[in-house]
Length: 61
Image (cartoon, rainbow, N blue to C red; front, side, top):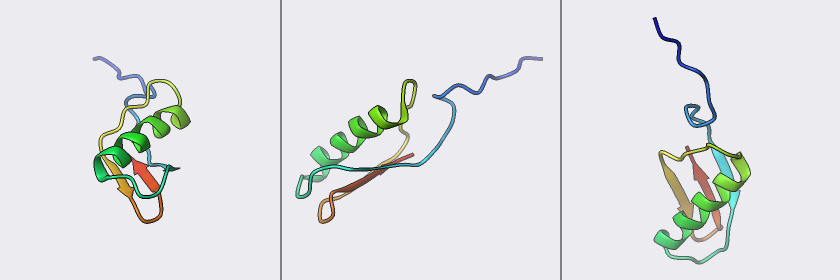
């Protein structure tokens, strides 16, 4: 029987970040991804990314 360790990359958690307003969806999601990885620490990998260009808020799972 193998046990799976709970590393930072295996945990799914929501991280909210604030990036610049008015970016395109592609650029906003890329900025949110970079900011979330910086905020969450080493080993965090995003499965879903969202960005609102009106408010500049982004989130990742």
